[in-house]
Length: 448
Ligand code: S3P
Image (cartoon, rainbow, N blue to C red; front, side, top):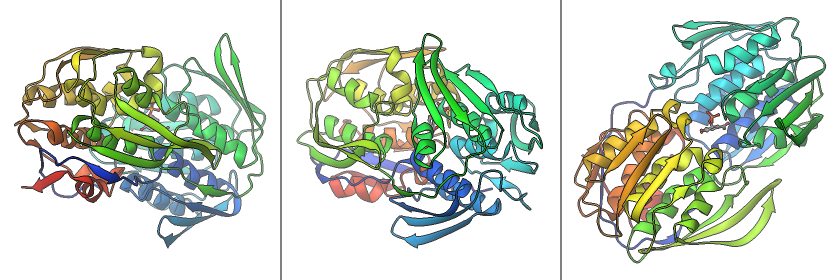
């Protein structure tokens, strides 16, 4: 099992004014998809800017176990020599996806319509997460799944030998579910239709089109209707992975709450299905600007400039924006603690089934540091204490969740007293250079 090794307690002390340029790593969602679709094409897909975090490295290993050749040229440059749609070999070992829900769910979808059997596992966090949301739609193709009680990993998937295409309305707002069904549809004859009521990140649709699949997207009364024609011959691509907005969130939010800060975070992917946090921060009154907007590799990109913002106000975050910032609520709740007034975050039930129950994890850590939090099943609110009002001084559990760990390290940067995280080791799943990048800007982190 690829775990995070021994727990690494980390403490974040009040920071110097943050200054400089924060070059965050490549986008995690796009990195997973580059490797998986590269493996489904015939020939060499070249990827630059790949995120070399544990989650993506586990997906790279999995693609090799299914028969693709994956080469690391160094410096974020990788090649994948794909086996073609339906060309996966049966793995001779268990596929360990570590901490990654995206990795396991997308890979299960990809193999589900080939006549092979594979067993999947992960770390304690991943093995506690629900998989029925994937195996239910895959069963419609003829795929079988045997897992633990409650549809948990470890789980064996028996791919459908004669898959039938499906029409599926995604019952929860989840790009992982949508993508798993589309990837399964690649090797089903005919048209697979996926309908989502709320738009979620659309990297799979964009990338499938880029690789030459026949895919259409229509906005209808029923929702976003995505139609994919199965059994295409995918053509290898050159992919430049944009920097991850979900990682950019950490230096941006740290700058907003740390007096005297002025930080530039260049080349950030601003796909509208991902950028909700930045608009929310602007709505709160953050001094956050988009500079040099441009398009790179089919994705909108800009440089973000974030400056210390002592006048932020709590707001009601529009629930319709939730899918476009779902991974950013933990760090938003930290910013909310430094704003004046209450920030209400509703329509966010999905936060309960991420790498941890993120509402519970953040509520505990915020309360341990003197912040008042109220919560219900699908909402939570944070009472802001103003720019210099967060006492800090507490210890927070990270629950094997990288974004919980990083959020509390950010909180310590602006709090009156140091904030300790019981285990910072999960940070390497998505942001392996978090510590040097943040300390390079002016953060003061110590390890116990
Ligand atoms: C992801 C989708 C989201 C997100 C995750 C990455 C993806 O999960 O939280 O970090 O790359 O498809 P859900 O599909 O569970 O919403």
